[in-house]
Amino acid sequence: MKSITTKSVLIILLVLIIDQAFKIWIKTHMILGQEYNILGNWFIIHFTENNGMAFGMEFWGRNGKIFLTLFRIIAVIGIGWYLKILIKQNAPKMIVISISLIMAGAIGNILDSIFYGVIFDESFYRIAEFLPDAGGYSTWLQGKVVDMLYFPILKGQYPDWFPFWANQQFIFFRPVFNIADSSITIGVAYILIFERSFFKHLD
Image (cartoon, rainbow, N blue to C red; front, side):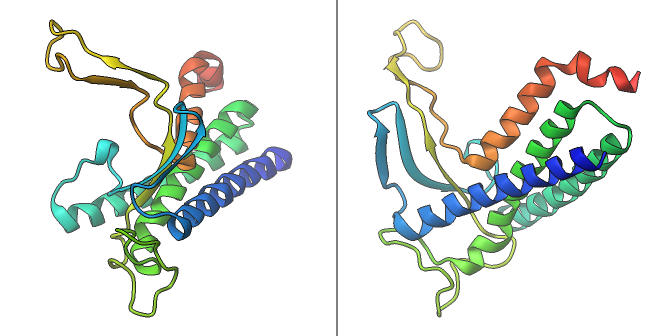
């Protein structure tokens, strides 16, 4: 049990360190909208920010943002509690690792929401300053999540008979995401793919 606990903690710490180091580098070296082509037009580092909801959606303004951040903090506490139970029950190693990845990713984006509005100023038309004398671009719990990984592998155009998006540009994969998002996705995908073997111990 001690070994898997150590692995869980190391995974969470490693994801958080890589995620935050990358985000801080982006904030302190790039302006909003700037991008670097890494593998031609297939893999691009594109700096963008969002308020923490999928596809940039918002609700209830600033109060909605605070509610969302607090809800995520409670959710992470719940995930941590469940992870502790799994370890005590000697759950399969891969489910512990998957839950650890999900927890790490959730914490990574929560850190942006809690602190980035205070420790950085705006990235519009200039590179943001870390711990600016004049203060950050917002307040506690109002920070924006930093995204940068963009993989527009396939590009084309919807045919004119296609509903809703006729003749519009098609891009796969359109969303821009970050290391924390990737960690959550990998953890969830592994659980969904191997759900039966993961949850046999709960039967």
